[in-house]
Image (cartoon, rainbow, N blue to C red):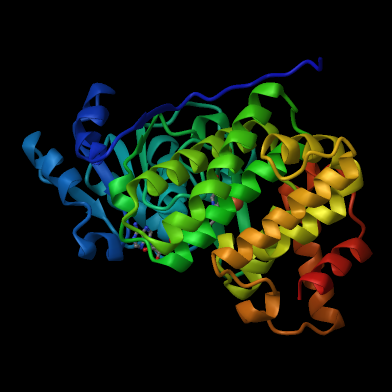
Amino acid sequence: MNTFVFQSPTKVCFGEYLSATAFEVAKDMGAERPLIITDKFLVASGILEPLLNGVRDGGVEPIIFSDVPPDSDVESVNRAAQFGLEQACDAIIAVGGGSVMDTAKAANICLSLGGDLLDYQGLNNIEDPLRPLVAIPTTAGTGSEVSFVAMIKDSAEHRKLVFGSRHLAPNVAILDPVLLISLPPKLTAATGLDALTHGLEALVATVTNSAVSDALAIESARLIFEYLPRATSNGDDMEARSATLVASTMAGIAFSNSGVGIIHALAHATGARFNTHHGITNAVYLPHGMRFNLEYSNAIYGRAARALGFSSSMDDNEASEALVKAVERLLKEVGLPTELKQLGVPEMNEEELQEWVNLVVEDPAIIFNPREASVEDIIGIYKRAY
Ligand SMILES: NC(=O)c1ccc[n+]([C@@H]2O[C@H](COP(=O)([O-])OP(=O)(O)OC[C@H]3O[C@@H](n4cnc5c(N)ncnc54)[C@H](O)[C@@H]3O)[C@@H](O)[C@H]2O)c1
Ligand SMILES: [Fe+2]
């Protein structure tokens, strides 16, 4: 067996209505004035009330920063950190989708260590522990509640910046499926496909392959295949909401240890350039990226296909093709688009395509892809996905 390191420092708590305990959880880590980072829609929807009442019951008036847009950017992070400093906050409770959680993780860098956020971008540039962070996802997709990364948009440059460090892993993740009831079908499907992409890319990525990470990725994929259609067609189905939420966290732990690959690199570049949603963009690229990697990853994909019941063939090529076909069926079943043009991505001329390819090539996710991709390969995948 290969040498490997596996770590997952985040304490994970799952339960209906558990978001009400967030303040207690922060207090247990020594916090007295946690900053709650969320978005305007979630505040207006009322689903944060149990959490906010928990804070009030603890004798504190909630300190809320809710100015986080989807695909949050450097400016939003700086505003959140500035507000936290002004309010003398000593911890963060992030409650929202990946955009909110990533904003909170990046704002925590500035709040805890000071200085310019951009000085910390890249991998392993944060050397000290940050303030306590409790992450509460309201989408089941990104895994940011357990991951070591935050993806923040540089709006001026149309690119996604990566901040990656084990210090970015939240201290506690509270998984409360009740918060997901209001998530509309399209976002449920899109975020579920983000989680599936995390699991399927983690299985083949090259950071550290370990049986521990593979087990999480395969079980996460099983839960998504089984429950995402139910969560998408009936948002009140608590069993399905719970299963997809846990699956997303498991995939987050898997990819934090094993990495993602070319599908994420393509999705990051496309999302940054054309403002497409991260999960939907991954969904479109997923079958194409899997086929591109197939001959380098057929052993593990074949094993996954057999474990998930999509094939009984001992021929890895045949079995891994069955896995790709199962992904294509799932995309149809949950009603997601399968072509980039359906996402509003315009046709690029040669010069634009070249600029966009540079974003893909420079994305840190591509380093961990099992097969090296040339510029022609990337353009080929893009054209097949278009
Ligand atoms: N840090 C990581 O490990 C990681 C991994 C994958 C993706 N990401 C990042 O996460 C972001 C995407 O996050 P996302 O897919 O969760 O979407 P999101 O956070 O951008 O949210 C999308 C929309 O859904 C709404 N929403 C959230 N929860 C809701 C609920 N329960 N009910 C109704 N509406 C709700 C939000 O208000 C928002 O308008 C991207 O920026 C992506 O790059 C980060
Ligand atoms: Fe992702």
